[in-house]
Image 1 (tube, rainbow, N blue to C red):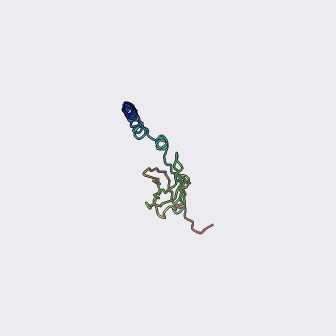
Image 2: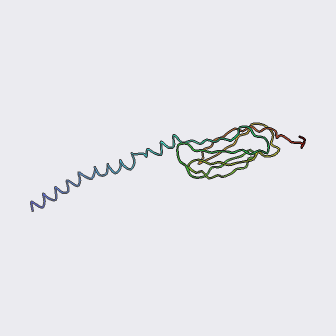
Image 3: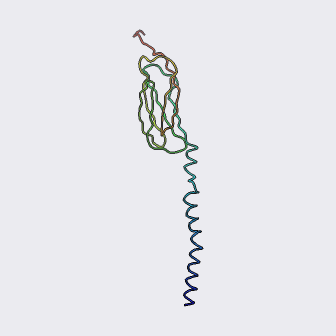
Length: 138
């Protein structure tokens, strides 16, 4: 009986000592270690928009390029052209292009092309000039 009492006391003591350590280590791993990689990606990630020509005439075409920097993003981007229409393009490795046409009759001036990806937006300027009219004379 003495042996059984000593054995039970020893086992219970050992298990009580181990419980607080196990509980603390589980709590630490679950709540106190934020993921490092997503924070770095979020900080360095940004969006860029560019146009093929900074000056185009009414009726001419231009190409809009959208690039995400800092991550190899695959998804979609929304581009808003000179006429206010929106176009959805698919990003491949963080990049997409779309060729658009300057609407006939748009007034000369500087306009903004906008793009949005995952709530982030960027713009590029484009200068529209008058269309050159050919009267058929050589």
